[in-house]
Image (cartoon, rainbow, N blue to C red; front, side):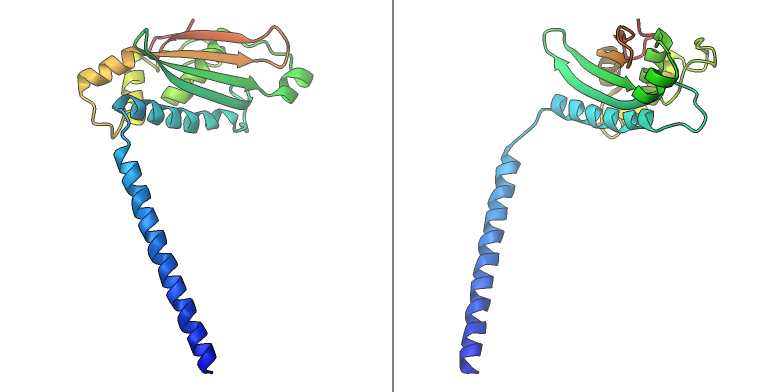
Length: 195
C-alpha cells in the first residue's frame, strides 16, 4: 500500500509539473501572437473574402423550382491590387455538369454573369423571368445592402465606405461544361450591369 501511495504521489507531482509547463508555453504563445499586428486593409480583405465565400454557397444549393442557372461549385478570391489601389474580387462559378452537358444544352449569357454577382453581393437576381433587368435593384439598394451586410461592425466612416465601394472591382467567370461557352464579365461593384 505504501508503494502505491508513493507512486500515486509521484504521478500527481509529474502531472502538476506538466500542466504548469503547458500553461507557461501557452502564455508564451499568446504573447507571440499579441506582438503580431495586421493592417486594417488585411482585416477588410479577410472579412470580405469570408463573407463572399459564405454567400456564394447559396448558389450551389439546388433549387426546387429552377429560376436560374444551377452551379456545382463557386470559388472566390479577394486581393488588393496595390498599383491600382483597388480591391479585386474574382468569382468563378462552374455550371452543373450533368444538367447542362447531357440534358440541357444551355449557353450562359451576360445576365447570368450579373445574376451571380447580384445574388452573392445583394441577395437579389436583379433580372426578371426573361433575363431582362428589372428596376428593383438600384445602385442605392446595392450600396445599402453591401454596406449593411459586408461592412457592418468595421467602424468605417461614410467617406471610407464610399471610397471602399467605389474601389471594388468584380470579375465573374461562368464555366460551362460545353467547351467555348464560358462567359466572363467585370466591372465596379455597384455598376448596373457588369460587361
